[in-house]
Image 1 (cartoon, rainbow, N blue to C red):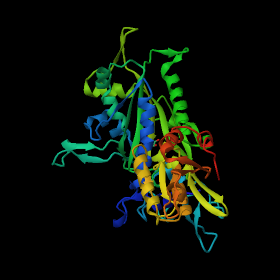
Image 2 (cartoon, protein in one colour):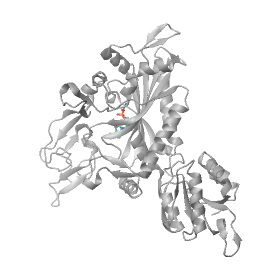
Image 3 (cartoon, protein in one colour):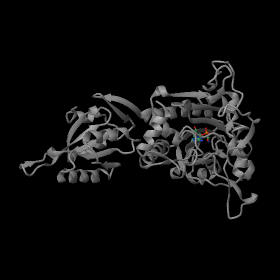
Image 4 (spheres, rainbow, N blue to C red):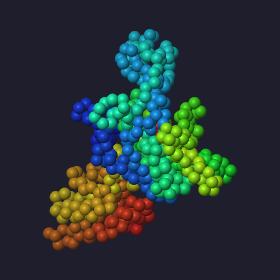
Length: 491
Ligand code: GAP
């Protein structure tokens, strides 16, 4: 499966649109459409529920995007948050110097008359054996020597654009947590180990954004800073190291829980030279994206670096009083840092299936019910029968109290099912003649409707009065076989 398939589905079915499309688009900025916003909200909601509400050792925070500019000096972002950039002297294209070998390159091969080739990333030309030395984009221009380019977006607070008013859009949500460490600790009377979690927008002026929503300049992060007492040991090992391993396991399990296939996830340790200036150890959870294995989430041991830096620059004490040892300590921090947009891309890619059903292609998003943008679609079998349509509308209004439920009568039932499959709706409820009866023929309806399961395409017939109970069981963890089995599953 390639990225274009997902991009096209996202646009066609209202998940993601290019930003400012009517003006020709804004580079690497994307807007979430009606289904995309539901999916992203669901990802953030289950992350928050599992991370904050279900854990006894976690609290939440929502810090502002604009912060005191010294925050970024203290954190090291002003001095270190940069990528090496090179320019092509001919076509003026810009590249990250450290990623040049990860892009395919254009080559004018001297051994061929029709000489323009695209050579796969990192490989030599298979005709002349040359390696890339010129611009990968135009194949002709020399590249400038690398220079450091700071990725933070600059802006000004107040009406005057002067250096004194210079500040930055936050490039990570993490610093909002560190600078609030003492506020949260004191107000919530917390004991180590504990975590502070936050979801919010971050901004990076990436040199080479791209691959749809994988790398953008504006994105959302779901970050945890988990504070650990560095003087403690667990089973004879430093507590920070043990907690780091626990968080790697926990975060991997989280992606599995919401449907990502284990064979598409792996953990990659950062090499020593690759480690950020603050990190003792970092492990990335990588996903097998259509562009290859790439980072989905980073889990770093940031040590006491950030709290010490902010204490030094602010002159405020950012310590924890260890009652047992009667001493002040600066906690170590384990940081599982996930991208909401990148997770959404991984969930979409992993859920996407093309199947053959009775000789026809069926596209289905096998999204976990907690993530699916629409939980239930209510469909009338015949839209010309007033009682059927009225009953379907009543059922939609009833179910919408608890779940995102839509009504659709714009096509024949087979098409309607396929449309819902394509956007991952787990259950369709169909109202038919048997449900409402036929007054002209003097036939009473049985007040039962059909529930169709997205994944198996099997059906059961359920009394309308029992619909909320049955759907609750299905959407809250009951299997189709268990729940549907009580009603006689049909094809
Ligand atoms: N506070 C640590 C931190 O920000 P990071 O590895 O730079 O670490 C964490 O970012 C996560 O944020 C990444 O794993 C990715 O999911 C997401 N992310 C980072 N840069 C991104 C970008 N330009 N576009 C989309 N998501 C991004």
